[in-house]
Length: 268
Image (cartoon, rainbow, N blue to C red):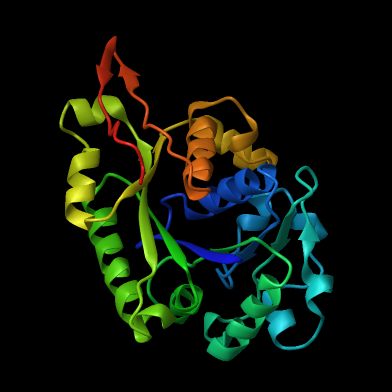
């Protein structure tokens, strides 16, 4: 059965679209058929991270308004052939999204794909609500900063209150990805620790991604960092394995000749 995973955050600039692209590639590399849909209407950038910006003819709004069929809007990834992409509209307003049209889109995608990844806009306006309403699972991207954690806590509350599952007495499965971790700052008490973040948000950790300069170069080249052997690339491979239900231990990060311990418990 297809699974709808919304990748979301409480604020912009925390690496949500980067996470979407890398997780989509990882799942597709595992043999699953995957589609990544950009719901950040007016502010799309998932296309650039995937290196597909020059192949866009139609977008997700065109599909929902009947200006093209689904197959016309789907873009096949250049490198990972099990991965497909539907871009957001760059010219429309986020308020153009309609709940029932989004449902129809997702139901049609479920017929052909194992995983449907929705790249949610930051914030809590209508675009965000449409991207989380039909989710089976939500991955909340947070950086170890008070403002990011606070905003993510609010997002979690909205998911619990406004998703279709919650309206039917069910719960959206939710996990935390801590992004841009700098072990040396945590060690000096200048950045929230993993324990701090998880104690506040009270959700299980599914990913721990260290700060990595390779992410910038990967974004600029349109080739997600998961293709590389960098620390962040390895982190996204581990996240993918956990999404697929594998038990993967969390690593230790070395800092200044010492080990900064992070969660070593297995993801359940």
